Image (cartoon, rainbow, N blue to C red; front, side):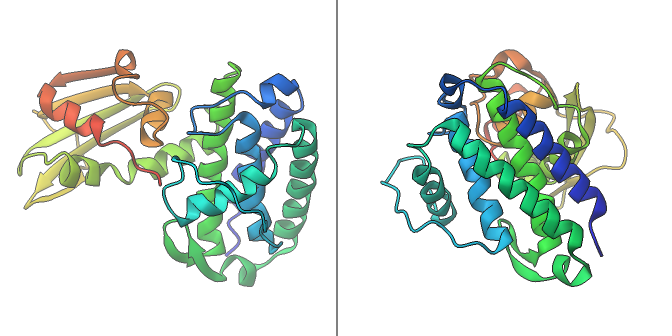
Length: 268
């Protein structure tokens, strides 16, 4: 089945990112972001590398130096693509990006069920091209927000792609609440994500397993409030709980709340 909504979100985000980048000065292109080790330009280079791979184009033969922010083979692949483009002007990288976005749109528009159902490895394990594109919406939108924060031009944080991203990140919260933070059996917590994307997420632990609850618990051990931008930053390792503390409210069992927030890192 063709994932029409996912494709629309993907290109809405790519279009938003293109418009933003068309206005950048060279200094802004080289501005460091909260994504460890990466400038604004590096974020775009990373997107280029992954989209080239999905398009079936050859990977870079460049070998990046060893950096301490590279933690795994996927990170190494990403860094090769990023480092190859570091000496270029931002405008050069943008030209490559725009040409590749146009090519990807042409490919996806012309493809049918066989293409989107093709089995492949995704960042979360075995899946299909459709599964990979679902993750691409998250990845590209998160990097757009990295860029916007770095140059202080907020925007596109209440879009369908934003809601999609937060929905995917919420899936990991039972692991955070149960396995990582060790919420006691029989107890519950509520995580309240406020504007611009609003979600109320009750999670309970039963027989040692945390799971989403269909209703708000009467007496949760702790209630944690934060806006959706802070939620995304924490989940993607863009800030530590201490750095984001002014934007986080913990009511109830403070120690459990801190344990949950301290284990929010969800993305590789």
